Length: 241
Length: 250
Image (cartoon, rainbow over all chains, first blue to last red; front, top):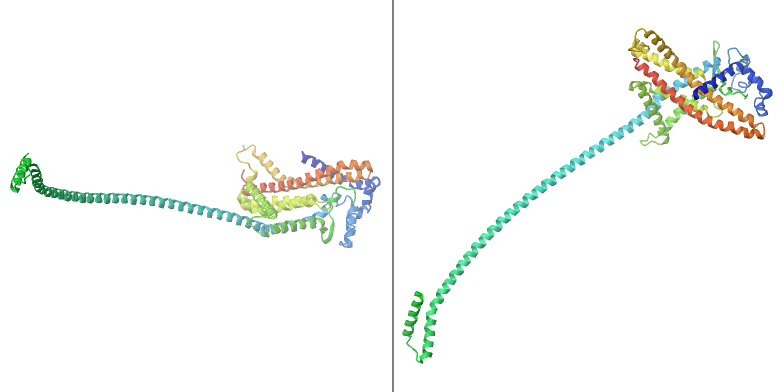
């Protein structure tokens, strides 16, 4: 919609410029407001070209001729003014050629290189990060493996130690028991020998006691031989019993 | 200055160079602006990328964005082989863009509001399509005009339609840009005359002049959009047409 509106304006203006331009300029002068008249003061013919000192005098003439020429080669609508086409094309070719050259040789490769460098840098960094990540993962895996190994080793050492200690304590216990048994045996033996010895003393004590008892009871001390004989008899009887 | 909305399009001859069999070559305001545009583009791009920093600043970002914008446009419409035309499309885009935007500054000259300039650029595009198409594909390039899978009795008509549509491309390409620039500038100028005319008519006129004045502001914003949009459209159509030179089959 916007475009069609513009096209209409453009066509209308073009039409006005092509057919009504001299009329336009002429009819403006008498009726124009004061401000506009002041601006429009220079004569139409020299309005555009007259002020350029750089142009040679010949050009002035040509330019003035152009403007007054009206419907000749020169159109009053500048975009359709064929006399300017050659210059426009020449400068367009030169400037656009220069632009193309500068862009394709200098500016675009330069920007392209910057982008490529950044792209490479990012790719490198990502690659390095991935490498580091893989490394750290490998390190963790090896750490975990070492840990598991150490744990297994510790377990085996503990088991061995336990077994060894158990065996040792078992051996200790056995030797201790053997020692104790030996001591027990010795003690029993000594008890038995002491008992035997004590029993040998029993007859003497019995004889002495009998002697004392009898002597106390009857007032006279019996003969040693009789006492001994009686005690032995009693002992034999007791033993028999 | 006359009360004339087309005065702004006038070609002023600064230095007459040579007259070649009645054809006058002169250094004109158009030439001055063309070289100005080239200088602006080149100095901006070199200035923006002077640091070549890894993390771009504002100017470098703008330069990189314009590069990637056009590169993506060309790659999307003409494929990665189309990147041989990347400098051409980039040059056309920046030239038209800067010409349009610079032309919006008061008292400047709009290079792209001249049909001969836009026509030359459109012919450059179509000429590139034709020359490159024949260089690359030989006569196979003519398959561009022969749609495949069409009944034989329809083919002559379709070929004629295709040829006409191909030939109308430079016309539409150049007229679109030219007419947009011309109409926009004329409309701005007409409203500006309304402001001046009404304001000179006394106190009532001062109030009356505000309406066209706001109209100018709104139109100016619209023209800024149009200036950029037309550069974009020109570049997009250029890359689409260049695609035909690379892939002529339908």
